[in-house]
Every structure is written in C-alpha cells, then in structure tokens.
Length: 151
Image 1 (tube, one colour):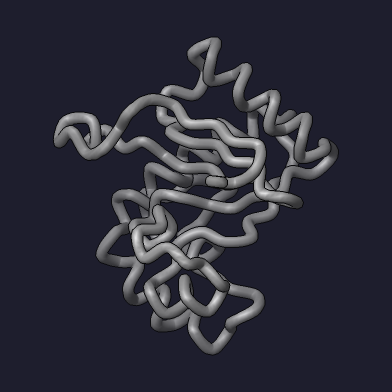
Image 2 (cartoon, rainbow, N blue to C red):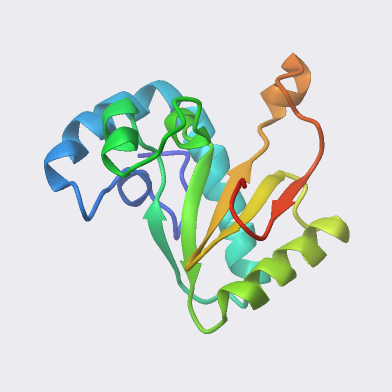
C-alpha cells in the first residue's frame, strides 16, 4: 500500500502471528486509519535509524477491537486501535538501551513525532503524534515515558 515506508509496510503493521484467522478483518478495519498508519511507519523508520539502522521486529501494530481483545489488551482506547502505536523489539540492542536511546533522541529534537515510548517487559511500545492531532488539540499533554508500561 502506498504511503508506508521501506521497512514498515501496511501488511507488517496489520499482521498477527498469534491470531492469523483475524488478520483479514484486521486489515480491512485498518483501512479507516491508513493515514495514521503511514505516519506511524515513518516514525518507525526514524526509530530504526536512531537504533543503528538494524531490523526491528513488529510484535503488534494496528489491532481492531476484536484483535485488541484477543491479545489481552484491557483498554478499549488503545492507540493500536487507531493505528497510532506499534510494539517493537530492536535487534542488536537491549530493550533498556533502545529505550534510553529513544528518550535521548526525543530530548535532542530528533524524533518530533514520538508521542510515547513505554518499556513493557521484552518490547517497547512506540506511539506516534500525528500533525492533525496537534491541530485538533487531541489530548497531547507532552512526551510520555514509562519503564513499566502504563502502570
């Protein structure tokens, strides 16, 4: 699909290894939020560069309500359901080092669209701030960081 980046495709960001029977419906529902997904893929390109231009595994990107529930999310307002979040695992770097590198990059102005980075055990939750969110005043209260998910 056009609008997505070289390393992070619509297909990859809408896939589910653990729930393959749900992927087709998930991709159909993702089309409503494709602009958000394109912005997310561009942020992930920047994240990939900051983390040494090495591959990043996507555990989860867009999740429709059914898939969101199936993966165990308790939040009906998850950014994943708006195609604004991805759970990632960098290669060649610990989760802790990647977390620290992203915070430092954000603080130095390198990741202007990074809204949130959460260290959630063995992965990082990355959330994009879209231009239209700022214009529409949608709940942006500043960059959010957490070492223990959203707890």
